[in-house]
Every structure is written in C-alpha cells, then in structure tokens.
Image (cartoon, rainbow over all chains, first blue to last red):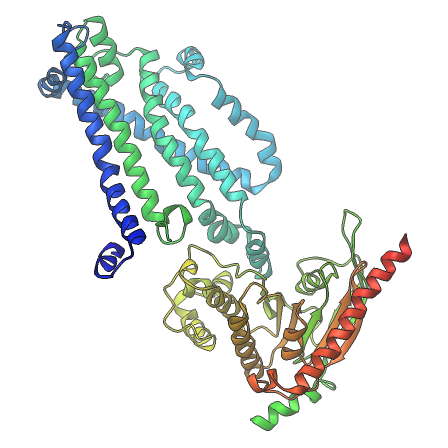
Length: 283
Length: 274
C-alpha cells in the first residue's frame, strides 16, 4: 500500500533507495531460501551421480519422490497414526497446561508447591522415563500419548502461568474497584492478558508434540498394521530401504513445518488487532 | 445556566461534607511514612486538587479514598450514607489502563459488565458517555489505534459510565502534550459542571490545579502531609480566556509560592535531621 503511494511521489535518492531496498527484501525473503534449497537438492543429486553412490546409502532426490508416490498408501496411513498421537497429545497438553496454570494462578501457594514437579517432568529425558511408563501402562496408544504429553505440556504451562501473572497492576486495581469476583477477574482480565503468552507456548508445544509422538514410537518400537512413521523409519533402516526412510523423514519434516505455520497463523489471527508481536513494523 | 455555574464555586463553601479524613496516616511495611496525620474535608461538588512534589503521599491519599488501601491510623468518614459504596467511585489512573484487546465500546462497558449488565442493556449509557467525551465514531477502535489523548478520554468515559458521585484522578494528564492537556482540562470541567460530581484530582502542576479546581490542597513530603489550602474563587465556567487572564496568573503565583514553601519545609526538615 505504502509502496504504491510512494511511487506516485517524487522521491529524493535516499528515500527511493530505501523503497527499492524494501522491495528487494520482500522478494528476497522468499526467493533466497527457495533458491538455496533448490541448489542443495540439485547438489545432492549431482553428488549421487558423480560418486555413483548406491541407492541404499543415499538415494537421489528423484527416487525419494518416486518412493513417496509409490508407497503413498503405506506412508500416509502411517502419517495419520503419528498425526493422531500428535494432535491428541497437543490437545491434552493445552487442556493440562492451561488447566494447571489457571489452578496455579488461584493461589501463590499452589504454584509454589507444585511448579517444581512440572520442572522435574520437563527436565527428565522422556526416553529415560519410558521404561517406567512401559511397565505401568498397558495400552499402546495411552503409552504414546502420555509420552508426547509430557514433552509438550510444559511450554504451555510455564508460558500461560507467566501470562496470568503479568497483568497490569492498575488494571487489577480497576477490577477490584468495580467489585469484580475472582471468576470475573480471570475471565475478563487474566485469561485475555495471558493469550499472547499461551499462543507462544502453543507454537513450541505444537512442534514438541510431534517430536514427542515420534520419539515415543521409537522407544515403544511398535510394528505392524497401525504403526506410525517412526516405525516405518526403523523398519526401512533394517531393510536398507533408504528411499523409504528418506520419504518418511520428509513427511515428518513437512508435517512439523505445517503445524508450525498453522499455529503461527492462528496466533496472528487472534492477536493481529491488539498485540505488539502481531503488528506490522511502523516507521 | 450561566448564573447557576457562577454560583457554584462560593456555594461549595457551605455544601455538605462528603468525606472527612481525620488524622489519617499510612506507614508502609518498608518503614516509609507515606502520610502523617492528614485532616481533609471534601465537600459535595468540590473540584479539589492535591498538589505537591513527588513523595508527598498524594497518590497514597487517593488510593486510601478509593479503598484500594487501608490507613494505618485515623479514619475516613463518609457522610450521607455511612461508608460509600465502591460503585459510587470512579478512578482514572495516570496511564489510560485500558484492556488492549477490547474495543473502545467494550472498554467503557467493563464496569457495567462486571455488575452483570448485558452489552445491549448498557449500550445507551455507553453511547451517551462516549459522546460526552467526544469519541462518537470510535466505538470499534482498539486502544492502540488511538492517540494518547483519546485513550485518556476512553479512560474517563469508563470511570464516568457508572455515574459515580466521586471521581478520583491520579495525575491523569501528566503524560500528555500541552495542547491535548488543555483540551482535556476544558472538557473535564465541562463534564463536571454538567454532572455535578465531586472530583479529587492529584497533580504536580500548579497551573493545572489552579485552572481546574475550586480548592487546591498543597502537600509536603517526608512525611507526606497537608501543608496548606488555597481557595480558587474564580468563577466557572473557566475557558481559554481565563487561562490567559491576570487573575489566573495571580492565583498561579500564589499557589506556586505555597508550593515552594511546602518544598522548602521538607528541605528544612531534612536538614534539621542531620
């Protein structure tokens, strides 16, 4: 919008240079990473050809795409399994994280008492906890969910707790002056104020729940019909089926990127009118 | 109407007492005596300014009146109905203190919403109040889209939408530029004359306090206390002509002298202490 306005103006060289530079940056932001990516893939392909690398060590990119197409049925049904665990655990992480932080916000005492437990859960590597979960939990899905949840819920808990506690002091006084109940204060003041923090946590948790789901599946070592992408990768590794391994890896990466983009979009849509983080840079 | 307003300033001398602070003191847990032995009578319809240097406890006094804080000693005696219901107090902070995610309309709705009044039911009062502060047409804007002066107008509308009997203002215009401040001064006076509520206005500006108030209470620091009181007997309505009049300049000089004495009294006290 501003660029069009400026084009009709007579600009001095400095301003004109700035407009030009901004335009280059806008295009470059997309074009540059894309070009580098294409170059990297091309180089990958060339290295395979030049060095005559066997397919079971490093397949050419074209072969990976071909495998993705040929094994689509198998791979996408596995992707669905992984996605199910991912989204279920993300949903549970949201419910658990927000629920706990609201509980913590009710009283400093509750927060002081229980926050250390959350930290213990967070800092202990999930791979190390898994054997215990394996003993205590029978159901395979529950096992995976629990793992992914432990990995994903902490950023939501800690961010939302921070958000609920960082309400402007004057606004708190204002609510007090107007005789607001605890519930009203939570509903109309603290929860909306915590929204940007929560969404920041959600963005991290989205990626972590995918990682959690894949790692859980790795350590659980499921195989067979209803197995996710992680077991496809293990399986392909055993069979030296590198093209399928790469194809599965590609799917996981793309899923992670997609989850991040969707959550970023949601965050932007919710915050775009009022929060600094979602506002366009103004000169 | 003109005559009625002219009569208002002297009339306040005999207006009934709304609130009497008697021997009010406040000591914070860190040992600071914010207020010491404050006696102050606020009458119905007063526009009373608390003027003083920083640290004189004027904001603390305001918070005590609002009920946001309790006095360490002394009493606040609300007349005409025991302790005043909080619903009868409007508060304007130094910052606009708006909900950044809510529209102008919803920000003004907030005090009514907290009383359980629906948006539709509150709408006439909100629309009317926004018109009073000249914000008609900005109902759907969010705070960040407004200028500093407009945000403050929203804040005033929010404080006044419940039709409180007392409006407490804590240096509300201190962060605004002079032109905007003058404009808001004028509009606030207009609102006050029309609605006849009581204002307690905290400020560190001699000029602002003299322009607005019928009573200026000068406070001194360490410990925070009432130093002296000035009656500003110039007639209302006060407009731009008053702002440049010799009367105004004289009153400002008078208030300024008192303030200087108040500040020096602190310095002397401090010196004696050594």
